[in-house]
Length: 150
Image 1: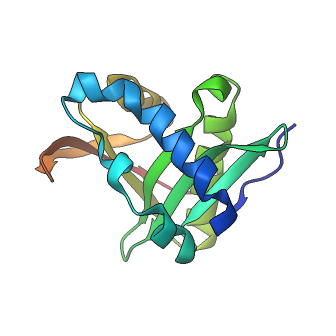
Image 2: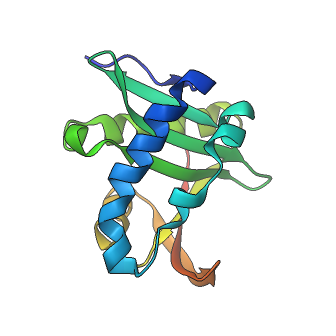
Image 3: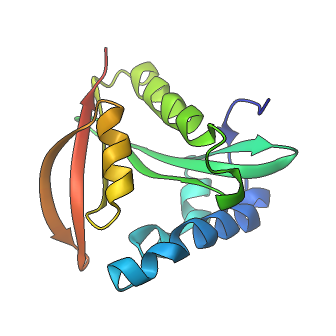
């Protein structure tokens, strides 16, 4: 059983980089360029306490990036190592993100994903996220979603 997600440290950066690369590389062809999370500054995000990691089998297998905002918690990124996908780690990270948002006093959690990542849109919709709008940012066509928190 994997432990609970924990705050990432600089020692986790190689594993975070590998997960991001391995999880997002398959989408490059579909999108026509690297997805946004592949160009994020994870050292900066870790230093600001925004990244939590989830270990399984003694190794980091997933991560979530959470950014508090005035109106909602932004779930900026959620990624699971391809070898661990389908094992429930993504679900655990999503549950963790929603719980952290509640604990921080947010009444909603929001996210965005690329419109070409249709499986992600469907997954979030099944979890209660509703599309709020679509927009192009940084040359990427994004679908914005929001979920009210009880």
